[in-house]
Amino acid sequence: MFKWARHISRIIKVGYTLSKHDALIDMLELFGDRPKALSQLSKFNRKHDVNGKPETRLVIALQDLGPSFIKIGQALATRPDIIGPEVALDLLKLQDNVPPFPESQARDIIEDDLGASIEELFDEFEKTPIAAASIAQVHMAKTPEGNKVAVKVLRPGIAKAFGRDLEAFRWLAGIFEFFSSEARRLRPTKVVDTIAEVIALEMDLRIEAAAAAELKHNTKDNPYYDVPSVDWDRTSRQVLTTNWVDGISFKKLDEIKKAGLDPNKLAENLVQGFLGQALNDGFFHADLHQGNLFACKGNKVTAIDFGIMGRIDLKTRKGLADILYGFAHQDYDRIAKAHFDLGYVPADQDYTKFKQAIRAIGEPVVGKPLREISAGRLLGQLFETTATFNMHTQPQLILLQKTMVTAEGVALNLNPDINMWEASRPVIEKWVSENLSPIAILKEGAKTTFETLARLPQIIEDVEQVIHQMREMQSKSARRRSSLKLFMYGIVGGLLGSAIGYSLYMLLIN
Image 1: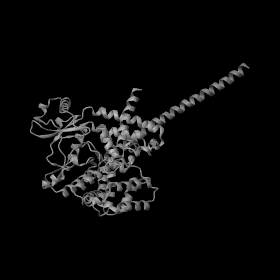
Image 2 (image 1 turned 120 degrees about the horizontal axis):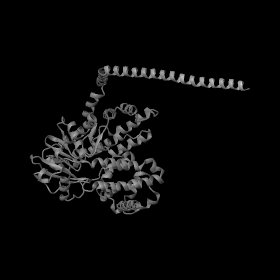
Image 3 (image 1 turned 30 degrees about the vertical axis):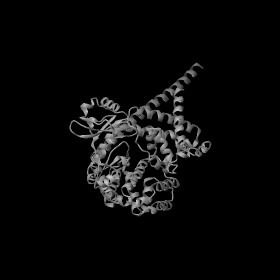
Image 4 (image 1 turned 180 degrees about the vertical axis):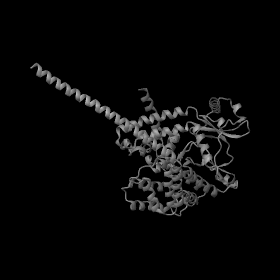
């Protein structure tokens, strides 16, 4: 009973804030049609619209609700299949800047989690954080070894706050599903569970540290992309320490130019670095906004903040490369074939019509600079095609699509005339030639054959063992059948003997 009251109280507060920003209907529409009873609400609070763009209302409202809802909104931005591409693109605008928590609390968390005093861990520790986000803030420090580092500290009580808000939303989602067939189809409880899983991983900074270490290993041979090293001795569940990045934030374009760095080259390095991660390793940084990127000496791009990472398997990467290569070369037959081969489009769909639909998506963007391409319109067309040809949502590609949109925006800010397809071409063509060309396919087949031959003795031994086991089972089965036959004969014989004896007995007594 008290839990219900707590949920209702929290939801009323959330509803009031959303209504204040005229975003209540926007929020409810994420999971179905506009409620008729609330349609009139759209007439009120229009003064909160920003620059005449009503789609920004939800973003403003979520930022006003605080850290939990900022992170929830960012998580929802990764699910355009549920909330729609336009809303997903809008939620990408959520800014992760929130007021910092006191330095004394940061010190307590660091000392409790690492089991040592600040003085033992660091020679210097800046009191004022250099950045404060929804789940953590960052302090600059210097280790006794003389290394300048960035110390990320989890916001106190944030796990409890997330838990409270998500529990209330899970309760509300359950009510929606009980009363609405549309809600049952969209399964909002499943969405809440997915968001909870994503956020739970971000609450353990050791997971982020491992992601940073893996990405650094994967990009070690790329001279134009870098990742800071993790100080594992000063890293724990609530604390992440990495080496300091000497660079200029991508937010400060004027300073980048004054430093003699080339924004055009940085934009190209960002696009190619991201695509290289996705195609070569299937593991990529999935939060590439300006605040997480720095321009360093030699036009090197350095990324930070590895709380949101994406993975795609080899099969999906091959399909993705085929699709991107097809768009870059206007080879729509290749794109269509990739969709059917991967099973994205059911086999009963019309191949020719699907190829024509893909051409309608690709032709308008060919040869145009990025500033003339609407990522929202392109995504909208893709999702319309998905619905038309009964394509199932591919969860492994959703985060990739979202990150591509963000990377495009950052690249556009650096170079308004960049052409995403031209910048991507070297990475895509190299990967295709190494993995999808006839020679590559033959090499892959030869490799598979060689691996099979190498395992042949073990395979033969395994087969012999199976045959031996089968023979033993057959022998045991034969013995069982023989015993069963004897047993059955005994029963039949006993019954016959009993019948004959009973008949003789009846003859004698009569």
